[in-house]
Each structure stands twice: as C-alpha cells, then as structure tokens.
Image (tube, rainbow over all chains, first blue to last red; front, side, top):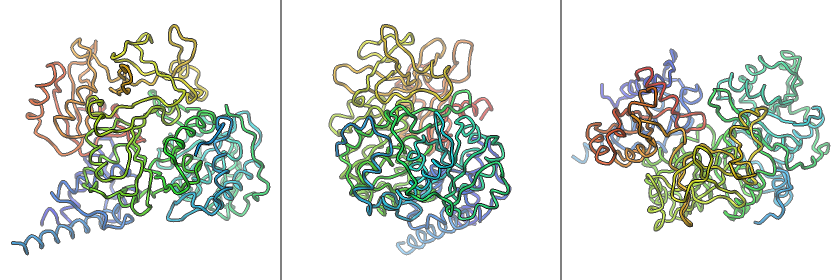
Length: 99
Length: 534
C-alpha cells in the first residue's frame, strides 16, 4: 500500500488528528470514518482545516490543488483522501511519462 | 464619504441611510444568497418591531443573536439595534456551558436564532430560568417548541410583526451597541460594553480613510463573536457597500472566495494569510481586485507581507491594532516597502499611530510615563474607550485606571510597546505578562520568539517560561508551528544571537499550535502541555 493511496492518507489523517487532539487534551472520536465531516463534527475549526491541508501537502511533498475540490466535500474524510490520492496518482503518471 | 456628526447617531443609522439611497443594492451575500438593502431592512425591521412589541422596557435592553453566517445573523444584529437594544453575539460552536454563562450574565430578554442553531438552542434553554422572547425568522411553525418550553414565547416567520409597526428608537449615544464577551483569566468570560458613541468614532475614521463606496465588496472572515466583524458589517453598510460572508466551509478556501466574490477589501487575522502562504496559494497577481488588505488581531509578521503583496498587486496593506475594550481597532500602520522594514522590530510590523482623538501613554509598572525609546505598557483613552466590563466593577477598576498626575481614565492594554521617538510608529513587543524572570534576569519572551522566528523561517513561534521556580522560571521552551527543523542547528543559530539564559532549552514542533476561540495562540494551553510532560 502506498502512503499516498486513499487508505495510506486516511492513516496519516488519523495519526495527525489524534496528535493534535491530544495536544488540546481531547479524545479521538470513536466514530471517525469516511463519512466524518471534520468541520461540522467540531473536530477542528476552519483554521485547523487549513492547517490540515498544509500538513497533507507537506506529507505528499507537492502542491495539491485543493481549489479543484468542492468545499462541501473537502471537509469529509473519505472524499478528501480520495481526492488527494487521485491527484498524487496523476502526478506519478505524469512523472512516468516524462521519464 | 464623510459622515458629519456621527457621534450622536445610533449604530443602525448608516444602514438605514444606505437602504434609503440604494434599496436595490446588495447589502450582504451569505449562504449563496444575496440580500438587497431593501430586503435586509424589511427583515430587520420586522424582527425589531416584534421585539419592541413583545419585550418590556428595560434600563439596559440587550438581545442575544444566536446565529452563524446566515441571513438571520445579519438581520438579527440589525433587528436588535433597530429595536433600540444592544446585541450580544453568541455562537453555536462554542461549548454550550460557555454560551449559557454569557446569556445568563447578559440578562437578555430576547434571543434571535437561525435554523442551524436550533439543536444548540434546545440545550441552551435547558439552563435558562427567566422567560425569554425567542424570535426564529427561519421557522414558520414554532408550535412544537412552544409546547416543549411553555415558559418562553416563540415567534416564527408567520408571526413576525409587520414592518409598519416598527418605530425607530431614540438614540442614546451612551447606550450599549453591543456587549461582547472576551475570555477572562479566571475562566469566566468578561462582557465588554461598547457604546454607540464608541463605534461612531471608529466608523467615522474608517469609512473616511478607506474611501469606501457603494461599489466596494468587503470580506466577512470574522465571526460575529469577534468584534472585528463590526468593521466588516458597519463600514460596508455605512457606505452602501456589500458584505461577502463565506460559509463555514468556504472559510477554508479563502483565495477562491476573494476571486468569486470580487472582493475589494480584505480583513482577517494574519494566521489566515500565514496558512495561505504555507499552502502555496498566494500566487503572484492572484487577487487583482483587492484595493485594501487589512490585518488585525495578532502580530503581523514582516515575512508575510511580501507574499501577500505579491498576490494582491493593487492593494495597500495596513496593520490594525486594538483590544475589544478600545472598540475594534484604535491604532494602525500603513506598510511602505521602502520605510517599513527598518521601522519593524523583532520581525513584526509596527502597530503605528493612534486613531483621531485617541491618546497614548507608555508607562512603567507604577503607571509613570516612560521616556521616548523605552519599553512599557500601552495605555490609551479617547472616544473609543468602552464603558468597561458588564456588571463587574472590580475588573473594570483594575483595567481602567487613572495614572499618577493625570485626571483622565486610561485603559491598560496589557501590551508591551516601545514609546516612539519623534514621529516613529508604535511597535508592539509582546504582552506585559510575557515578561518573565529567568534565573534572575528580566526576559521579554517576544524577543526570543523574534529570534527563533528569524532563525527557523517559521511564522508561528511561542516562547514559554519553563519550569517555574520560586522567583520566575529556570529556562524557556519554544513551540513552533510548521515543518520540523533540526533542533540542534536551530539552537546553534539562536545561541549566536541570545545570551545563554535566553536560549530555548527545547523546541516543540507542531503542525498547529493551540489557539483560543478567536484563533490567537493559546499560551495557557501550551503551558498545560508542558505541565503534563507533553
């Protein structure tokens, strides 16, 4: 499994969030899953989400075009991870073509 | 547009004037809908008439607005004011216990709530002991709520009073325009009483300075529980301009929002721009429509300015400063690429010069004025100085003081500044309470933060005295936000510029540092982490 696969990104998201929540003295939610809306569930606020996007980008080592993702979807775990994973696949196939 | 004699007008006056002149113009864009001045006036007047008819006269009438980024939020603020009440903004995302304390302390007789806040309203009402008038302009049928909570009166859209029953209230410039709760050091929020006269002085200067006209489009990045939102709404409405309010989700795509809305005036905390920079979305020339970029609420790093100006090539950039107690903002500084780098101190943009009529004093611990060039606490007074804290004479007395040799009351900001020499701008050096004693030396944590900020290239840096000793602290730990740097390399770089006792013992890297409800760094939370061994 690639760390940039949809599953790999979910794992990254989970460890990142649990670390941040622990820093605030909060517990990681039991019902965390693909349909979890990070913003509406109150897990993080809008600045926290911008930070999360930054962390994902830094984890991937490339600029992710978050503007292409519908804001209604980008706060939900499943669609967010799928989107980033698809972007990374596109980058990787473009790089293969260049080679 | 210069507005004469604003000081005797109510906060609602400018909106009504603009609604009379431009009834078809856009007043607010929210939830993807545009409300014209005429539409917003009608809804606000109907809410106001309902409150006027249903509530009893009170010496200090206040109405809570429990609504978030919705048409009702804006109509609720205006409706409270048009009823002759001050408004008390509440937010459903806050812990419900905190909101309960605010509502109880404010002794509001009425609440205006939107549909999205209904679940939390239910929780809120469980602790309310006095009957309330609850206005729900989004909800047609309130029967089930009335049955569940018979002590209160619920009014839905069907039963809002008609507009022609609304009566414009008489203006008392010393009445509370809004009561805004800020975090108190004891954990109990303090209500700051801001009068119509306070806001009038602020608005008069702002509308004039920024030449705001009916063609302008202003961002509403601030929640209404943050007093900087008053700028967005009332500067816009004073001039017939449009407030563009992103949804909770759109807030995380600010760059796209600027373009989609065609914003001309941007106003946010610097943190928003810091994340935009880190995300790489401050592309050169991306925001051509912006003619003003304003930042307030926390120190503005010099390193951010060039990136922002590259993205917004047609903008002028200003750093605003002000505690809630001095009404939104009371000092400002215009960035000048030639002059400003030399005028900035510790990598932070100056806070500049006081607003008209506001007087500055820089004092020592005994409140005696410091000499030019020396550091001290910033005290200010003038037309924007608020009345103090709601029903809290003790806290008001300790923050609003008369310095020796003076007859006027000044507000103690708790901010450490350098008293300017000549016509130099005021520079912000940190908080007074960030001055600590380390191994007997007096240390300004802001100085350590500035050096670490420079050495690491990271904007989010917070220094904390740690561990505590009988006389102060043994050393300093530093929290950094962003990509982890090599701590030993960083320490060597910092050690070359600071005396031994100021060199941080440990660096803690986080993707995001704890922030309070307004997005400012939360030092207490970081101290808590150190206490718990991280």
